Image 1 (cartoon, rainbow, N blue to C red):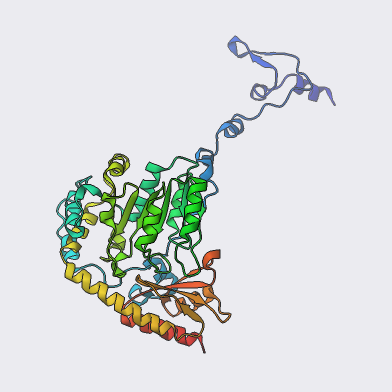
Image 2: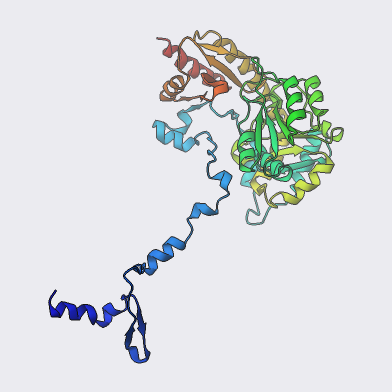
Length: 418
């Protein structure tokens, strides 16, 4: 090393001097140096040090949510349209149990006459609850409306479940119960249904006694098979020390009476309903529930104040003004369900199950692949639902549509036999 190099190291320039370990600035800008140990670490740049101290965004997320699998919803119409290269009106949508007839004409009129969309909605949905009381025969103080029944499912869990509490789920059934339980930090105890999709009531009794769950979620008619729960089985479960949440999203198609009035006699029963299927308002998100008075006061405290929009409440009230339309549409769908069931029995690779709802579950047989059937029908513009979870692996579910929708479906299924 020459003398000049040694001089530069021992006497660094002012710019370089600020990075030399051991430097101490004196008044007037003069530098003083302390001997530097050979073991001293090189100082980390300020930006890198700050980045290392700054926590990552996901570190703020609750631990149990970091591994939560997202809910898999049905693709919206506009996405399906772009993906299939077809106009929305040319797609036969039989994958989400929607009502293809849509709402009564009064709904469009009511939406067109909205005067105050810039004003917050009534937090208590008074007009809607009054109309529901008249429709159901249950006093409005027992009724709470929500942004779809889905919101009420989550609200019930937030009010009832502590992290680590347990719920009973009876698959195959509506998967939102398990999903919302996971979001709320609850544990899910599964009591699978029997081969005919009826409830295993004996096993439910055992699980409630052994595991001490907080609540059980039941669906009648059940989604995805369309079976119903009889009074005897429901009463046995209501005798257990568990909150029973009975989802009646499809009750209108079953010929059974709703159990909404039962909440006045059973302090551990909640009954949920929706306008999505009955009134064709799935896109506007209007649900409601019947609750014991001892429970509903706490849901009022915890719910979002403006959960039901002005448009949703106006639409639901308008739909209830035309019960004749609602009844006629229900009858059309039930009639078409029976026709569809008979036609599906003629497809050699499908085993349809009797349904009391607006859909039919089919087991795919003869070595056919359920997912491929769905994909092949989609290429023809016909959308159905397929399942790949263990309880329903190799099954498809077909919503009931209009007669022309059934004709298009059968044309596609028959083409798959060739």
